[in-house]
Length: 228
Image (cartoon, rainbow, N blue to C red):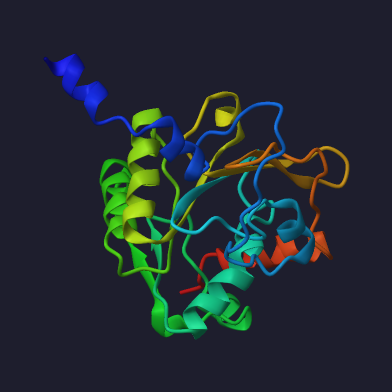
């Protein structure tokens, strides 16, 4: 009975194709515009939706902290907060440095910081995504397995929210339900590569932000400890 019930609630193949959660191999993917602009034209050109996927989870896979991951998001976060949208940081690993965020254009009145331990952070991350009160939620889930990531993806969809999960690059080999996965490869000058994007095959071309060294430095400053 349980198996029958589980099968009964599965979406049809047509529904999944329509939602671009699956696509047929060997066919040119249908490109659906309407993504949230990242503020980096070259990156938007690589993404099938022309920006961050809306109502979805994006994973940023990092070889180490401070490679420019936060600066990658700042143009989007600035635009969202200037429009009155709430951006939540759930248990950031470092203390956000308000002047750097403000200098990047983020309206601090709409920036919320949530402190929690590792277990509580995952719960808070999911609740913020699901709440429909946030335009974007940033989280650093340390112990998220595939099931937890799926809950985050569903919560972002339910809350119509941009979700960004910062994770160690060692997870790149594991499957993920996130709509988009970007990995920073530090070889050479360093660049971001799309490892997964819903509705399309990942492009082989990487993306390196203009002035990437300064951008990375900006990201580190944004999380520098505040002097007492």
